[in-house]
Image (cartoon, rainbow over all chains, first blue to last red; front, side, top):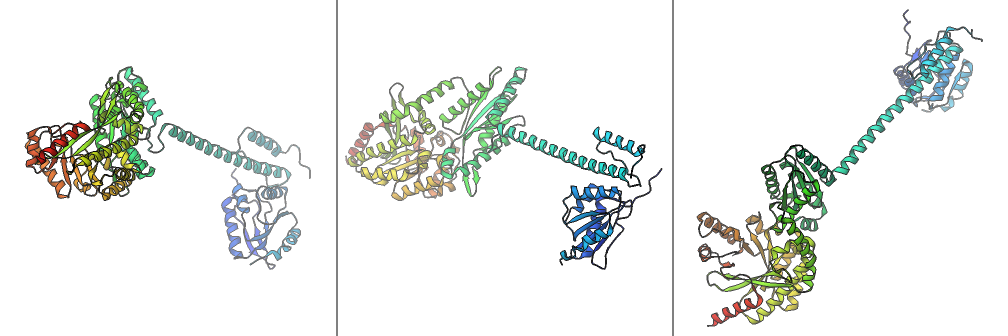
Length: 129
Length: 510
């Protein structure tokens, strides 16, 4: 039985009305090093020199490659990061990312979107241009 | 949420852990779509396996790197232990190993190896005069030149200081002699260091190995032959003969007795007249040192000067010669008013000695002798080392009025144009150039050309070693003005020289 093809690319990256970065990974994604790098570069590009809090919706992510976790450890335009997941798998992946890499900005894992947004809003004052 | 105990994923998880525990760090388990706690454990184990795999690989890479670095360090240590750091040539240890290998091969039927030992003739003068930096460059270049003359199977080594050796395994005597001759010839070309041409020169000892001879003996015999080459005038090749050991012991003995000889006035000066060829008048004399050895009798300079140079007695010996010569000159100057110049030999080591000009000036002043009465003879090879300090000392003495002469011209490799740059006024033409002058037309032409060239650059020539009337006549015809040699007189003690000068004075009055 052939495996359905899984995506490794992010689904969307936007800046919402509040000025927060919203990065969404598709369900079942296997995040590779190059895919993480592309997302990272796009974050930097759309921030154009500013720093913003960022919500990373990683619900139902299948796996994050070691190389991808290394990219998440590099400083980028995000001033703080809320990792939003749902399942125990998300929690393991998120905490692995937090524990193994030295994250460059305050980063926390949430299963509740509202709490995640509240954490990010606290960081709106951190923005610098 | 409680997971069913019979979940197949748990069995797969156990398998995964077993695989990982067995060392297969590439093993992974795909979590299910359920994304539940079991999948979380699977994901966690996958991630831990990733980390473990990464750490293992990093460790393996580091171990490989460290192993490589250790190996390189070991190779470098071996190289340092077996090679000379300055020239990169083999050192004494490696040479010894190679000689042992070659002698072992000879025991199994190959030809025994030959060993050549080479010592630079003027290295100490170069090193003292031009500095260790130049000395090092000379050694590197000598190593390069020696390497260029050997066969692929030969080993060139630096034994230490300015001593080199070449091992020629499985070599015929002709092969070994050819290498020795090429080595000598290579080192006769001056070495250029910066804008200076320096002539190092070399004495070579060669030993043809015998089957069954040990490595140490082979090297020792080549070394003995090298000392024989030094003793027989330097710049030549000597093949080892057993009787050379006796000569080597003699040299050691001489070196140990020389200090006593100088202190106890066992030295004596003899004088060989220098004559104006047209008139036969004695116009000067060359002072030649003799050693009245209590057991061996009267020793000639050839028997102890090289030893004095090698053993460091030469400065002391040179001082004695200068002081005794000038004291004698003072007596003759008072007794005989006619022009008379005393010629005193100065070794390259003395020329290099920093106080040489002052010492000679002070000695002349103390004795009240005019500087123009004294001439200093320096060998051609001694002046060719490019030694600036030595040349400056000679210029100082020349400016004072002391005559400066190049001795043994024709035995080294200096050109007339080089002579022009030296602070000299007289060239002593070596006797080897006139040996056949009475019979050989070509030699007549050659010597005539040399005399004219010397004259053309404003220098005076004195021809040494005139032994027959035919030689003297021929030289007179060529326009040579001055000469010395057994035809006129051998070197004689001071009293005899005084007698010759007295006769001359009486004759000229008469």
